[in-house]
Amino acid sequence: MALSRSQTVVKATIVDHGRQRGVSPPAIQIAADIAYIESAFGASPRDADAGSSACGLFGYTEETWREHHHALGDKHAPCNQITAFYNDLAVYMSWYNSPATNRHIPDDMTLGEFVFIMHHGGRGGPLLCKDAALERYRAHITDDTRRLTATYPEPCPGALVLDAEAYSGYAVTGDSAGCIKVAADGEAYIDYILEPLLSDDERRSIVERDPDGAFHILDA
Image (cartoon, rainbow, N blue to C red; front, side):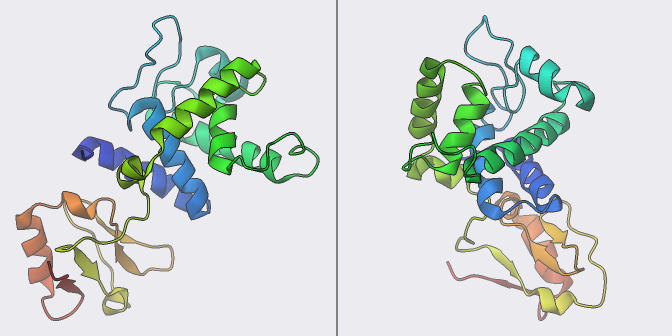
């Protein structure tokens, strides 16, 4: 099982948004996990319950959007849903970590589980909804699915690896697949989320630009 190119691009967009906001890698991972649970990174954007208004990348309902995120605009726009979720995530993390609000959170409940309960089960929803949300999270986020949701995956055999120092001092415009990124400090790096989507021709083209400098191929 693998993500499609469009799903992988959506996941990369979620990651980039989190990085730009200075969100920690574990919290970015939570955002990716929940987007996968709610819509398979946009591949299944509508809730299975035909009577629910939940839809979009993170499955926001009309009521929740109207109450908390209407200022962002169109609920169906993926960029708005990503912004809304990171706004919510900051709130839920503060609740989870604050002694004033976390006294009723079970000691064995992870931050990811808590965030999904608040997001999917509702901030003030009934306990039954919260229990169902917890069961859904645990059923979907497993060792197998983490291969799909991983936001900081390890490079695989055959992957391109970039020595960022080789690009210090001059600009990198990127490649056609968008997997070469330039960080805020000006250093270039390979985005291992998008890199596996490179075609063989794109890989060869990248290596041919600087065969003795920035790139090498990991042994298979």
